[in-house]
Amino acid sequence: MIIFLSVPAYAKHQYLEKEYQAEWCNARGGQMEYILPDKARVDCLLPDMAVEFDFAPKWAECIGQALYYGKKTNRVPACVLIMEHPIKDKIYLRRLRTTVYNRKKIPQFRTFTMKPEMMNVTNP
Image 1 (cartoon, helix red, strand yellow):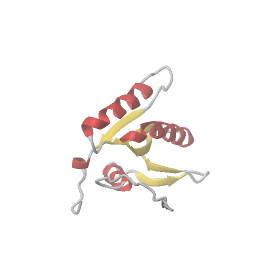
Image 2 (cartoon, helix red, strand yellow):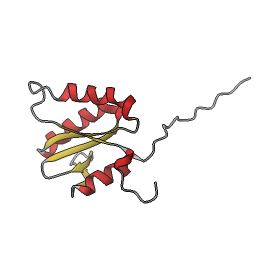
Image 3 (tube, rainbow, N blue to C red):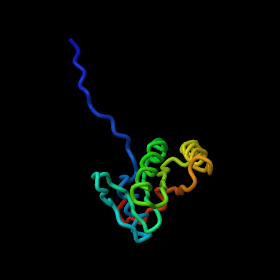
Image 4 (cartoon, helix red, strand yellow):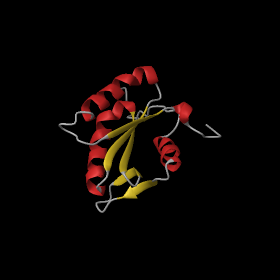
């Protein structure tokens, strides 16, 4: 008899999402983990933007959350796409921007990228 144990598979990232979030948000004077009345959390709230962070393969999830946070906070929705594999991740960035930079469907949306070399961490 062979028994297979279910072990969650976690992708190895150079930094945690929250580390990228802290670097980017703090540099812009934003408020991290802003809690909405429904208990949803905006990754970074700026005076003019509600910002969601996600690793590149989760580009579509980033759009949905950013749109929701923007609506709930009356701010422009924004995604910071974390690109740890810039060549491979370009396709996800292209998908994100093709989807949101269609003024007929989404009148306002901002996109940014974050890469490991942009981190100002003393102990990676």
